[in-house]
Length: 458
Image 1 (tube, rainbow, N blue to C red):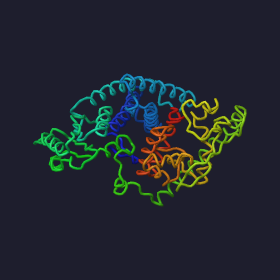
Image 2: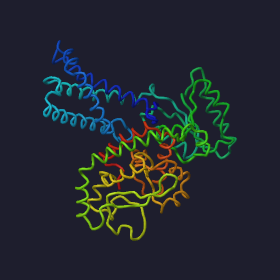
Image 3: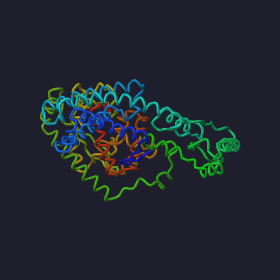
Image 4: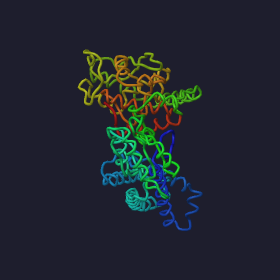
């Protein structure tokens, strides 16, 4: 896997993206050469033709990204890939038609865009079919043995079988017998059978829940010296899922980890980026404020803005400001989490929650320093003591400023139950471990997609 912006991406996904960039640019270059002939060089060099093709490539890849074509785990059926691909090409055709109609100078030459789109459609359909075929070939996949037992090993097996983009094929795994000494011998025999001039496996994933007396160290060392990769299950799960699994997480995971380093220089850079992003956001949304305020006022009785106490940096409380989306008597019976299709939410409030417009006033909290633009979402003080008691390491969320958006928001969504909050914490811990300005910028970028796709709102 390849690490970009402190996030791990399957090598196959990076190859897919780069190849499609070449296909898009190549399709429009070919169309330009066929239409213009000997004048191609002049158009590309002196009439900004190369820049226009570069822009077309970037727009096409961006559309593919927003339609989840680089996130196969979000696509359940193979036919859905081609359906989304055609949606991208249809949207691209409409967009290019609008641009060339409004700005004729943006066109490369007559019929170039039309011919390029025709080439692109055929090339992408053929390429995606070839790519799917390559993914299914055993020769292009790592052979993996999962050394483990129970639920943890089964989680690894199921994830690898569902994530074809990971490029790993599970060739075997075993449950743990009741006798630990017997299990160690069994595991040792299995590992020994993989040895040879050319080992029968490429990687061993150690997924034992309790390694005392069960880990065949000598056999693992032999395989390691034979060139087989030995990897701990938690490390693999972290890379593939983008979160830290709480199951099996120990204090040593924090003590000896390379992450979880909060540097003053890093925090200053993140603070500057948050302030700039919040100021730009307020300027962009400023014309909408009077309209939203009027709609909130006439939609239901009550104040326009809603203030609520949240827990921030170091466990200190502060007041968040949002546009009111619920009835005035929403919490007359006490504090509780919002749920899907919550009857307390007004019709206008439901729309604002889906589009995240109700969150815009929190940009003032970012400017004031109570929040960052990116970070774990601040929790209510009514729930924090209970969550700290129920979920291990929950208090680590308060190491940094809470955020308007965060890694958990773009990768998971809203948490309205204890289990969902636990899942969100796993993403928050990953963010805290790998926190950086580049990761913040990536989250800001993905937040736009989350809003446009209307994911994770309640």
